[in-house]
Length: 175
Image (cartoon, rainbow, N blue to C red):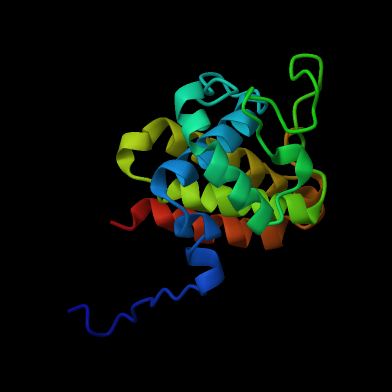
């Protein structure tokens, strides 16, 4: 009966399906994803978003590997998390404005972090939820009036980023 219906074959390039974070220890990559995603999700204005900082114990354990990861991945300096929970070079985190993603390079790097976050085990459901919330907010760039939390490069090229976001959301359904 279904023989005449063509099936879709999903192919994804290796750049969309893997993150450089997967080459680091799981605890270190989880801490990087958790701290970065929670920081951005807390600034989206979504009710129920997680706290802006990751649990200190997990973050401190992974700081050495995270610093190595950030150097290896060319992490934008304003996105590197220090041991105090703020951004490196940010001085006092409480007096600074929340981090924003302004360049294409920053967004590309952060999307790689979110992609890795979407492939985390279900035990990390809060982090996965924050990843999905960020992407849902960013998909509003496809609307005539995007939300104010959507970074400018995404607003300028919404179709390009929407394709990447949808490809990343595929990780939610991979066992």
